[in-house]
Image 1 (cartoon, rainbow, N blue to C red):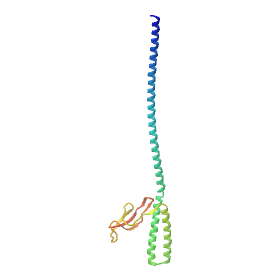
Image 2: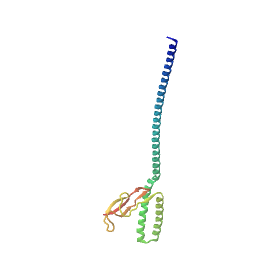
Image 3: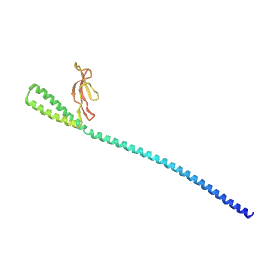
Amino acid sequence: MSKENENSNVETEVVTEEVETFKTEEVTEEVETELEVDELSQLKAEVIEWEDKYLRAHADFENSKRLLIKDKTAAVSYANESFANDVLSVVDSFDSALAMIDTTASEEGSEVLEKIREGVNLTYTQLTKVLEKNGIKAVECEGEFNPDIHQAIMQIESEDKEAGEIVQVLQKGYTIKERLLRPAMVSTAK
């Protein structure tokens, strides 16, 4: 081989090596770029997944917080329910005492009995005001029977009331805020 040929072969080899190196580098860069894109896609997917988990956990926390506040409010509002039930027997006693005094006072017409009635009535009024201040109110017992707040004890004949209307209140019913504390015991017309 001549020197020129040798130089040409060497140059060809060098050029071939450079081309192969260039191709290898290009392929390597493409593979690395694809790997970076895949890795980036995976990281984005993980971020979306974690963000979703965070939002769900936060929503659960807010719901739990809201329920706890609601439960706390209900517990505070109705904490006196047991005490109120106990006080209702005192109110019933006052009702009975006032009814007896009214009956006796009308028969005897005694001034002392009238003063006693006035004192008992004032005490009864104070007691009912305290109960109302704490959200305890008497159930309305006029007109139509309502099974949600009334309990029918008996049915009686009545000429001036229609069937299903309340004729007589045997025991007052009470509510505490919007909750029924005790239903009113009534008699209804047949």
